[in-house]
Image (cartoon, rainbow, N blue to C red; front, side, top):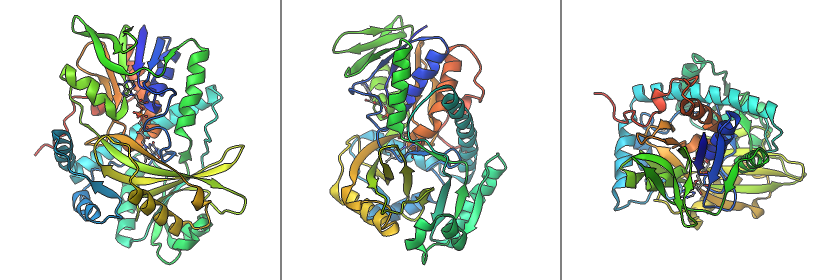
Length: 425
Ligand SMILES: Cc1cc2nc3c(=O)[nH]c(=O)nc-3n(C[C@H](O)[C@H](O)[C@H](O)COP(=O)(O)OP(=O)(O)OC[C@H]3O[C@@H](n4cnc5c(N)ncnc54)[C@H](O)[C@@H]3O)c2cc1C
């Protein structure tokens, strides 16, 4: 089949690769000049297969109100006059029950574990240089009650095949000496040895080379202005340079996909959650963390990215509900840099940080949307939120299976567009 993939982020590129592997003739279209220039550009670099619990958790609404009032808090809300933000928030709040949280965590865990298996077989098949390492992840807590909550989630996840260890403060410091500056405030942490890191943008660039070598058509610098329908079915996309036709279309346009779907009457519960990252050079004099670290107190993740020509530390965090702008407010970046440097003062060259802002394409319930759109010929692979790099391999394979008329290895219903985001009473 001739398949057009709209969007060359990590979701679109992984889907394009998977579809090509299945024998389809693939075209990729993106408005940017290169792949991985949207949310996939400088994300937190975590392949975080076991840390998939959704943002919509019991108690999060109360916490979020506190954070929103604190200018240094991990979350900020810039109220909008449009309906999209308020509708998303209302749906999000309905997803914050204990039952819903547990069910979504289990579904995402299965998707994460499947994604890890697929990613490992992809890496065995192909030579891809994207700073990948299985270095393990340590989530640290400064508050005993938060550590206890995380230990309960680890117990839930253990029942579903996740191997995690709950550690006290001393054990955390022995495992990761770079936590020294937090010695007096640490309550403990949860360690997952099997977690990985990688550079999502480089991963996309590597897939681009493979796709091109194997005959895919890659159309960059072309904005899709609308989907092309014939007889009610999607048969391609309109661009300023003319139409691009296909037998089926996969929409992987990240947070911007809503604009291509709205004129067709298709609504997806996706809203952009803006986050920021800093990428810092690491020299021989620095002592970066060896592990991936999540500092639960500030909601900041740290990923060491080693590469032949110099090591880097990626620091990412914050969730701002502020519409579709990718601006980088100075105050937010200063807060991120200050909190990170105070936690890991010797980790990297804090004076030479490269900053970035990206839009997580977040669904209200925290699960990606994979499968048919309701319009014949139009398939969706979007809404990966804070986990796009982690889950891309799984959603790409599920999409490829469904598009080819085969049953995916995981039940697709929890990730279908039509799933309810409202909680049963
Ligand atoms: C600060 C931050 C930290 C994160 N950390 C992690 C992490 O550690 N691990 C993890 O797994 N995930 C992380 N994420 C989430 C992850 O980066 C996203 O889920 C993922 O990048 C989404 O990929 P995507 O392909 O759906 O979207 P994108 O990467 O945004 O790609 C969408 C593409 O569609 C194109 N497009 C849109 N509209 C059009 C149009 N009309 N015409 C042509 N092209 C169009 C865009 O140009 C873009 O290239 C993080 C995100 C942020 C912001």
